[in-house]
Image (tube, rainbow, N blue to C red; front, side, top):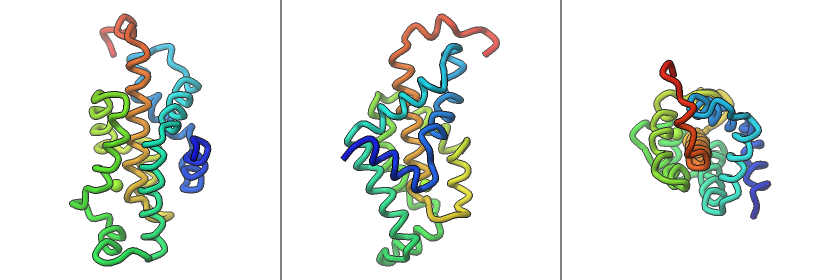
Length: 164
Ligand code: MG
């Protein structure tokens, strides 16, 4: 079990670390003018290095893949195929990832759930498979990586300007 395994699994499902880092960058750049994509990627990898995140990813991605192979029992198979809006278990699972660096991640997660930026939007179009869990997991990872940056840069507010 390793960070690399989680990264490979994401890659297989069409999500790169840099695509998640891009979301982190968009969430945090206005608070950290000197933030780099490299720092965002490092933060995403730190999140992927946590065992509970890896376990959550394995679980959610397995359900997405089983649904694609039509191997889930009913009524779950139909719920997953429709991406039934009231299902909500996908968001519940991703919340465990969102809050690993504190509750500040919840705000970003809520924002991403609504705005679906970057690769989250691509996954949500579901043209190339079932990503009921993956879109929320990616939002959860981005939110956690984002709050990790916020916690590591407590001086960031000094850089905030009035026209942000
Ligand atoms: Mg979902």
